[in-house]
Length: 85
Image 1: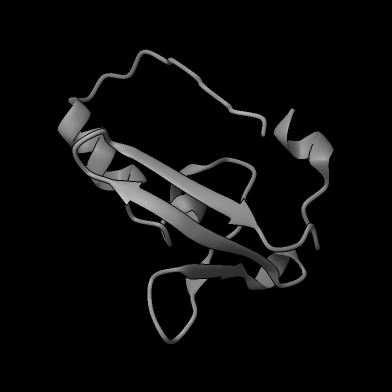
Image 2: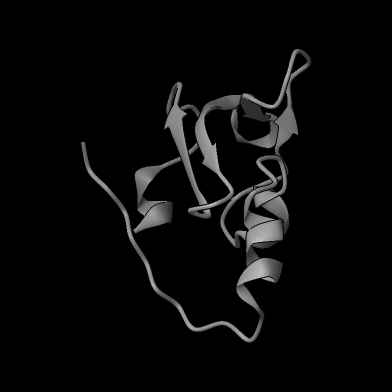
């Protein structure tokens, strides 16, 4: 399984950054290539991107101590791979 790791320098504390990143539905508010995401009824585990053809992602793990998340693409509708290169 591929693993993506990045290490940017930000003008914010780790706590401030983690507060933003751990919000599974907020990715469209800070990621420059993603539209707004909605959390589906029934819990925080599934987000859908209505403006991206209904693309779906499932939250697999959220670890506040390690400040890490894992999620899985449920499909690739509306999200061309080139946008993430």
